[in-house]
Amino acid sequence: MADHLSRAVIPGADVVQVRYRQADGEFTETTLDRLMATEVVAGLPVRDFRWYKGRRHYSGWYHSVTGDRLVAYESRLELARILLADFARDVVGIAAQPFLVTGDDGVRRRRHVPDLLLVHADGLVTVVDVKAPQRIKDPDVVTQFAWMKGLCSLRGWVFEAWTGTKPVVMENVRFLAGYRRRQVVESRLFPEVLEAARVQGTIGGIEKALSRRHLADAVRPALLHLVWTGALSADLSDPLSSQTSVRLAGEGGNG
Image (cartoon, rainbow, N blue to C red):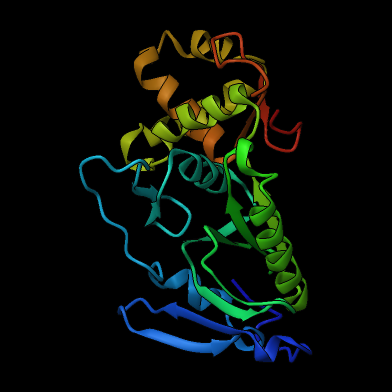
């Protein structure tokens, strides 16, 4: 996961303070121009969060296959964005509550912890703030996000304000995540599933083609795992079913 911008000296970024937490739990202070995204991804959330009775937010840990690690989330909406990042073919690193950034916005001194930091296979870095749709136009949120977008631009990164995606796509990805771990499926069936996909165009068609040799209860999890990994491409614009179109990777994209 090469961070090709990690040592660039970017005017203005050298006065923005950043604090993050290493894998051993130790905090590190640096400036935005010197921050290495790969070190942040390998570390821990910069702040702790706790569960308690009456808490309004839904918090927890998600086991991401990207990096084979636990990723913290503080709301169901954050969990949804993490699921999409874990499903994305080009994301190779995910960090939650990755760092605390402190700096001036020209009017006041600001401090902010973004929700996520994503490292992509090509070295691109995306900083994500997750916000409920009804709050995205709040003046304070607009100002905060404009500041973060400017900081990310200084660093050569992308800033994303995420409010959600199409419900059907999200539910499909959430369902597929149940099959994301190779150890819970019959991996020995992968070659046969992929071979069947050369001539069968739907989930049901592949299952039927293999029904004489294997139980559907074994074939479907293997098939859905291959959709999760991208070895098979599926149409996610409608709810997953036996009629869902699937094809070998490279012959079409996920819907």
